[in-house]
Structures are given as structure tokens and as C-alpha cells.
Image (tube, rainbow, N blue to C red; front, side, top):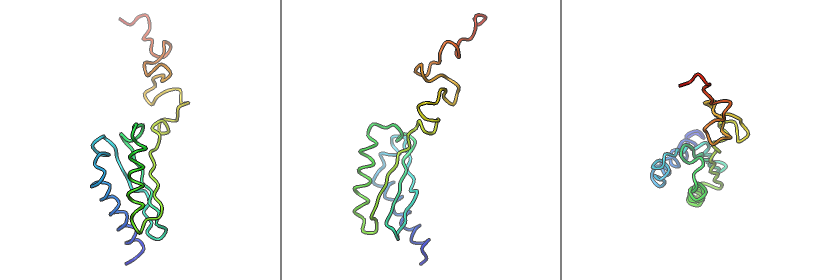
Length: 121
């Protein structure tokens, strides 16, 4: 068995565990991906996305995953990341959303950018 077989085996087992034991992630529109599963170092990195970004119980979910997987004898370190949805849009300082609407007005735009003009009926 090669190192890559060990890596794939641990990765597959963690992915299967996530699907089986954490169906709430998918039920709430979230996604999970095993980014790293190194059997030699014992390090596992999982990234949650989709509905998990900005979820109010994200900390509970990450804590549950970490506390369960750290009990596996071949795992010494577990990191669960939930990227901030704002990062993918350019962060909170980005003046416009990807659709060009001014986010400073709660997504409605401001008079200057959303005013259709006086000729609009």
C-alpha cells in the first residue's frame, strides 16, 4: 500500500463519516469537503461552505466535527473552516455586490446608482 492509498483511504473515511453523521450540513444547504487528510501527520482539514457560510450555528457544527474526529486514533489534529461569504465577494469594504447594487443601502442601491431617470414611467 502506498502513501497515496493511505491518504485516499483516510479522506474517503472522513468524507463518508461526514455524510453519515452530519446530514444536517446538506439538509440546510451546506457543503463539506475534506481538503487534507494526511495519515502520516494525523492532520485533517475540512471546509464547510454553501449554507454554512454565515450560519448562526456554524460554531456548534465545527465543534461537533472536531470533537468527534479527534477521537479517531489516526487523527491528531482537526481543523474545520467556514470561509466568510463576504470574502468571496471582496470583503465588507467592497462598495458594490457582484450585480452592481450598492450594498450600503441594504441591497436596494442608492439614488445615484438605481435612479432610472425622470423619463422612466
